[in-house]
Figure 1: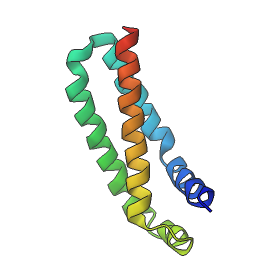
Figure 2: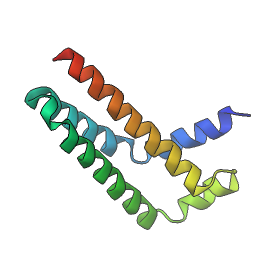
Figure 3: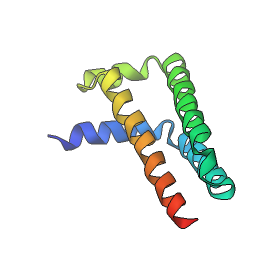
Figure 4: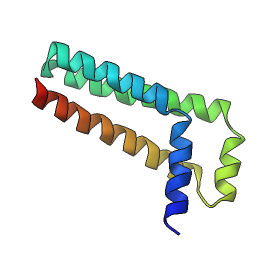
Length: 101
């Protein structure tokens, strides 16, 4: 039973994963090149872009959320799950990038 919601969240995340991962890779490249002094600015840039993605998808894909609602996932749960995962991925990769430098 627990696999169904996880698969649905992953499916939803795929709708903006490419954009988000490109932003993450760009931030990590800057972090690696310029050093740890840029982390604060990059963190807030990532949070800002996640906010833009949130508003864009909510505005452009309103009907998609009915699909997930009918399968038992609320819009709030989808967003909290995917945005938390994306931000935690960014933080983990930032720490790894810091160790590589």
